[in-house]
Length: 187
Figure 1 (cartoon, rainbow, N blue to C red):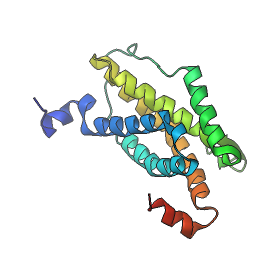
Figure 2: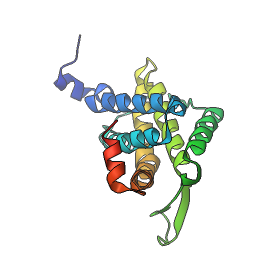
Figure 3: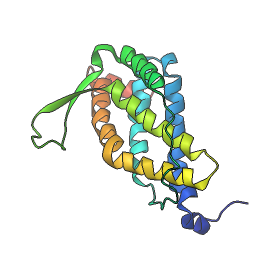
Figure 4: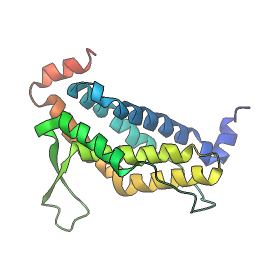
């Protein structure tokens, strides 16, 4: 039996906003799992389009009361992280590095060096852990998945999305903005 919208609002674990983020996160992780098969421009174009959606959906996550704070697990291994990072780093090559201003630092004037591959791999890890923890059958796991994702959005991957999106935009449009723009919509 399907829950009405009203019932859904009373149960934040099964709310529309959670399910929408799960859908987008799953698409993002599935794409990255096979990103090696796509050309660099295809990967950059996908990221340019999906990152704002992830940001929006994560910003809408509801506050969830967690019944059991120990019902949390992490799934992405260091080897999986490194494999994805190395594949993306090879794909982006010399254009992988970018700089941003870290507003958490007292001196906002010193740019910080980062790589697109590290930013995207970190986001993948956070979202993949969210998806896999949410899939556990018990409610406390789902509650922790939402709470942890909301916390990571506020403290880590929200900032990462904003910073890396600028670098991706630059790479897509740096050489010939008109040609690049037209290519984005020919696919």
